[in-house]
Amino acid sequence: MSRAEGFLLTGVFAVFVLAYGAVPLASGGLFVDSHEGDTFHLLDILTRMQSGAVPHLDFVTPLGALSFWPAHWIMQVGQPTGAALILSQMAVALCLLPFAAYAACTRLTRGVALYFGLTTLGVVMALSYGTAISGVGISMHYNRWAWAISFVMLLLAFVPAHKVPRARLDGGLIGLLAAALLLLKITYFVALVPVAAIALWQMHRVRGLTAALIAGALVIATVTIAHGFGFWLAYLHDLRLVSSTDVRPAVGMSFDEIAADPTHLGATLIGILTVLILRRAAPDATGLAALFLIPGFMYVTYQNFGNDPHWLVFLPVLLLAYRPRLEGSLFGFDAQRAATLGAVSAFALFFPSFANMAMSPLSHLSFDKSEFVRMVPESAGHPDIMIRQDRAYSMTARVLFNVEPGPWSPYAETGVGEVVEYDGIRFPECRWLAGTKGYFETHSADLLAAELPDGIRLFTADLMAAFWFFAPVTPPDGSAPWYYGGLTGLEDTEYVLVPKCAFSPPVRNIVLTEMETSPLEFTLVRDTELSAIYRVERN
Image (cartoon, rainbow, N blue to C red; front, side):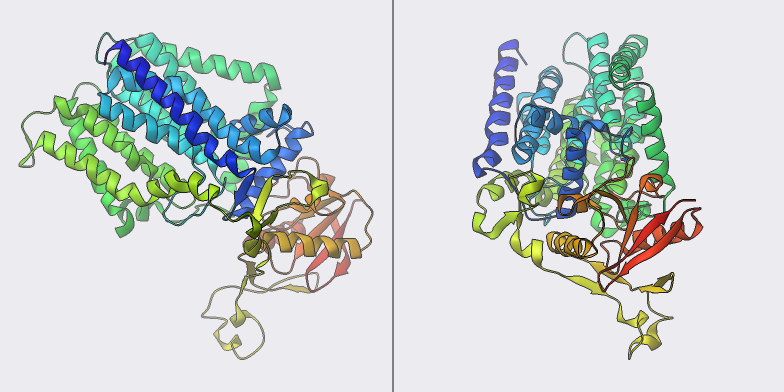
């Protein structure tokens, strides 16, 4: 690709980012119609950061701080939260744009380069985490960002440049992208950065790998200077906490199912085809690294909610980039034709999810605003975060009758679920499925009726703990905005709220078990149909 074509392509990418990324801004806010719990979680974290809290150091989260820094910095200059979240996606896409443009222009033909740039940058700015029916929202935005960063990193590592190789530049860019993954979500770093390092070593040897290490070290040093070495120790602590808990050992299918379940088997077969083609086209370069690439992709898919194989959108880039190098046949088929068919098949398998993400900003723009209400009270700020009214107040729950006394109790032993008792109080097997805002409003009204002191530090035995948007309570120092395990923050807690019907009964039951073994004492101060509230007694 000539220099003029490269500049033109970069300009196309820039126009796309500004135009496509700005579409949701025309709605005048962020309108959420799915995964409201994730949005409450994100608001909780951003609100704490606006008050000066630092991720890991001041509250528990296994997500890297880069998941929140862009929106936080934009809020710091006066943008409301909804606009800041939308603008943060544009900001990440603009930061990634020069990396993506350089990788595409130096390694791909025009058509493939255009596909790579638009899909990669589009994934960053979508308002859907994927799958064909996920709805519109900001949930799990960090997964989309990490996929896009990984695609650019892997293209730089796996596909050699058309002209003179730039070992130090390529290695430096890969190091910066790897550091971004470390600060974004550790899953991608663990699964994909070693694969990129192997490919980089095979292609550029010492110079490329050294440049990558230096660039990554500079990012780590910058963060250390800003937040201290304790930032990394706290990050490791949070990762160790979530890896050791029983709350979320997996978020969907098992790894075996990701590899061989009928819904994923097509992706696996195309992944195997990709490995064979790369091994054929580059036996002495990236062929060895290709053996580890697909398992890395599968591991990330296994760890992500929804188990959506985003890597299928990237496989066509690798297959078409190496297509001209192929000669002869592959299992009796023309090797170049096999690469083309593999690329088309990969995109076709992922198309429902891709179409959902691609259309999500337009779906956001078409919402009837009269169907939405503010997500949090006016006194809590965040004026431009809106939630669909029926999802906010449809108080839908799943109750297992077989574990309760009555006509269905004979099936208790053969069914699932259990009734947990603590301090003589029964906590039924009841899980909320919708109605997040109604849940918080009703519980908060009950807290006010309890006439507890204003500003109490409240620990919630449930997955979410965003009561401080709705009631005069505060989160305990060091607590987690989303339950990841243990009783983090309990040493600073004054009261514990245990809901009778929870968004995650397993989390509630784990907390009750931890309370039984805690050296602290818990005195019941209120028991209603909604919850039990305990005062924390310290000797």
